[in-house]
Image (cartoon, rainbow, N blue to C red; front, side, top):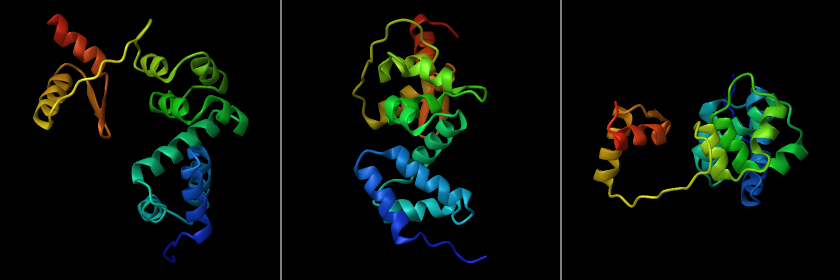
Length: 171
């Protein structure tokens, strides 16, 4: 099988879509390259480098676009909901989610509220930010994991519930 080499048009399409804030359009192009058998996930790293973006952005774009198409969202639905909200929903999506579920979940919610819903937090939410050095972040992450948070990629899920266990003294 010949080595995959992204065409100039693919690189430019991805670069331009990302520059214009159209991550889902970049996801569409990249998913097409992967689905056609031309590119592999290993090739995404080369594409990311040539398109002047991170591999993480490329992966999120593909994952979010594939999720949106799997549940049946049209291009206009995706545009109306927006990249950030779709990326949040994708991170916590169940296999049985439908187009109607996604639209209902996103409708009338801010990204912060949507993140809370995906994390299973009910009611009004307030974002709390900490300024920690590297050592303090490691200690906090370790404590959160000990209390039920789970590492996913470079982040943690379930950190809010884990933090509340720490605060309440519960195990």
